[in-house]
Image (cartoon, rainbow over all chains, first blue to last red; front, side, top):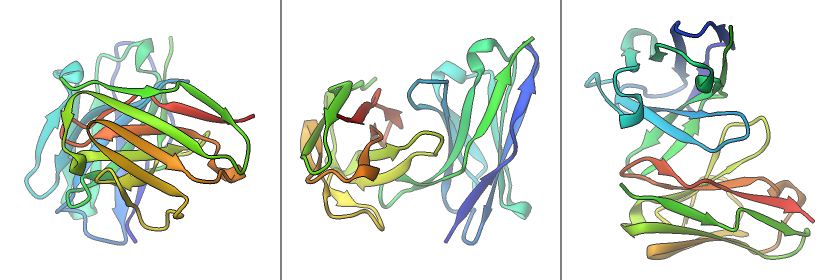
Length: 119
Length: 106
């Protein structure tokens, strides 16, 4: 069974960048779309973008265009999400999630990474 | 852009009761592309239902999904204590989520 394990919590200054990792273990990595979803404290789920490792092509939600970069390293079965120009409103839990195209849903999720933006 | 509106915002019920959660889309959605997730405090979301009505692996049969077009429903036939959580619907093509319904123990 595939598991997604994310990097640990981070505290960042406004204006800086954060890079969160998501490592897959126990199954195929390259052929599934990997998405990033964030959740601000007490709020709902917000899709940020995703990538299919075998093609290396990412697509992003319009809201985050120009500020987010999603990449993968197939050699380590790891996906990355980098968010730049951080502001306090970016304080959130960031999740990676595997997309199963057959089910048309996000079937496996990472445990989440808390990113706090504070001066 | 499709908007998903979930209702009610909060649903207060007791164990053993039936829960009916609604997800309405601003335009027609393929039923193949509608999913439901459950999220408990401090945990990642968990896939419950995909394709509007198919249960994900390991999901008890008290959970069922239905609907088509713009109106979709998640039903929990008899609530168990572990079912109190927040539930989200999602439209696959856009990856957008509804705002969630909080199911609380009355």
